[in-house]
Every structure is written in C-alpha cells, then in structure tokens.
Length: 397
Image 1: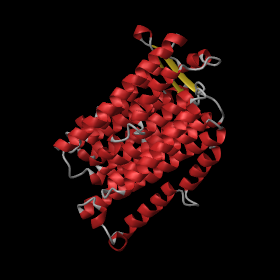
Image 2: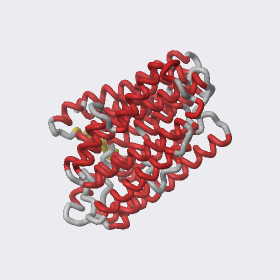
Image 3: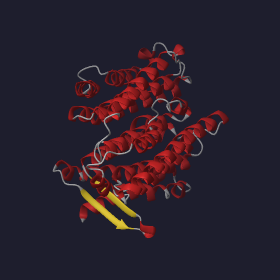
C-alpha cells in the first residue's frame, strides 16, 4: 500500500504542484523557483524509492475505477521506474539551470508552470498501465511543449510551436484510433488484459501502423522529424528538456511499453522499423552537416540518435533492448549537456552561428570542455557511456 502512494506522489506532486507556481510567483520568484525544483525533486525521489521493488522483479500496481467505465491504473515495473528516474533526474538538473537562464525573461510564471506540468505528465504516462490515461498524459505533453517552444512569443517562434503541436497531435489522433481498434478486439484498455488477448494472436498490421504514426511523430523520426530542429527557437533549458530528457523519449518509451513489454511486434515490422530508423539516422545526420545554427545541429543529432534507439528496440532481442534502454540514459545526459552548454554560449556570445564562434576553448574553457565530453559520449567514444549503449545496440542488431 505504501508503494502505491509513492507512485501517486511521483505523478501528482508535479502535476498538481505546477498549478500553484503562478500563484506563488506573484509574491516571490525565489520561493516559486525553489518550489518548482522541490516538486520535480520529489518525483525523482519517489522514482528512486521504487527502484528496489523493480530490481526484485516486483511490479507495484495502483488501480481505481473511474466514471464512464475507465480505470486509472499505474504500474511501476522495471521499464517504468527506469524511465521515470531518467526523466525526473534530468528535469531536476534543467530546473536548476533555469534559475539563472530564465531570470531576465518575461513569462517566468508560465515557464515554470509548463515545465513542471510537463514533467508530471511524463511521469503519469510512464506509470500508466491503461491506454486512456496514457493518451491523456501524452496530449498534456503536447500542450505544454507547444507553449514552451513558443515561449518568446515572436511570430516565427509561435509558427514553429504550432507546427510541432499539429504534427504531434495529428499523430496522436492516429494512435488513438489504433488504441480503439485494440479495445474492439481485446475488450479492454488495460495493458495486462490486452497482453493476454494478443498472446497468441498477432496485432493487425493497420493497428501497428496507426500506433507507429503517433510514436514516430512524437519522437521526431523520419518522415515526421522536421518539427524538432525548428523547436530550437525555444530557450535552451526547454530544448534540453524536449530533445534530451522527456519529449522525444515519450515515443520511444511507448514503443517499448507496447511492442516489447505488452505484445510481440509482427515479423514484417522487425524489418520495416529498422529501415525507417536507419534512414532517419542517416538523413538527419546529413542535414546536421550543412547547418550553421548550433542548436539545429544538436537537434538533428537528436533525430539521428533516436533512430539508433528505435533500431535497438526493433531488432527484438535482449541485447538490443538493453542497449536501447542504456542509450536512453546516456543520450539523455549527454544531449542535455550539449543543449545547456549551447545556452551558455548563446547568452554570452549573443549568437548561435558556429561560423562566428571560433576560439571558445580560450575564452570559455569550462563550457568548451563540458561540451566536448558530451559530444564524445553522443559519438560513442570509449570509455564514455555512449560507447557502451551503441556497442550493445550494434551487437543486438
């Protein structure tokens, strides 16, 4: 019983606490900042408290019947606890970084409200074991990311925020149709019931396609990738949150939850998805080569790395899946570091154009060295973490 309350705290402390932040901010910005960090830190500590149960192979379950026949169901198993720890820990770092970065901008109350709500929605999605709350939390992340991408309110920024919102929401609509199709065959939205229903029957190809449209659009994978580099107009802590820690990993997580942990991916898709992932990794890496905007370069790198994660999951064997999970952690840490370093560079040099940024090792050595280590990890240079995750993905393939 105690552990079920821990799950609820991990989800609803940031979700409900976020609504208090604008009110607190009207009286004290310092208290608001500290409160936002404490809400996210609480979520992280609750996730850590569930690690021992997950390591023991015990799934902690919370379920309550809601009106209209829906269930609010949360399950803390190894996959969910791992993803919750990664997301909440990196989000806490980003909140700390935001204290200085956001301090001289307008709309700070909305910023902290949206960031903390975003993290709470991610925690709700990660622990959801029913497709309806999973979809609701999925859409909350779309709304919050839309506001965060358009944080500066300039016309081009709002346009790009709208683009990200439309791509991900229409993808989510296709995914919802897929969920309804699953319900029609399994008679339930509960993942445990669905798993039993499809234990011997393969999932129809059209249902797989509909769900994949939602997953690929949220994860900015080819051909839905173009919104992510455009999202670089957001503040650097937002881009770190979207590109590294939470948003693009939502699709990866749901893919693992549905097509690895719940039901088997039909054989054809074990070929199709690696091809899509490989093409996405190659095209986005090539696009990065011709960019001069430092944040767009890092964003295209994110699209490429997400392709590697999908590749590891889609091959379907244990080594590939373990490599993909480790990849989520190592990429999240390294890519957050790259974006946060880029934010320091942008605020100090007043430019994102790499053709005007030579010689930073001499003038900003700490930032430059931090950036290098993060880049080496993303590249897979041993003995950094990115090497081991890439090695396992390739071994699995």
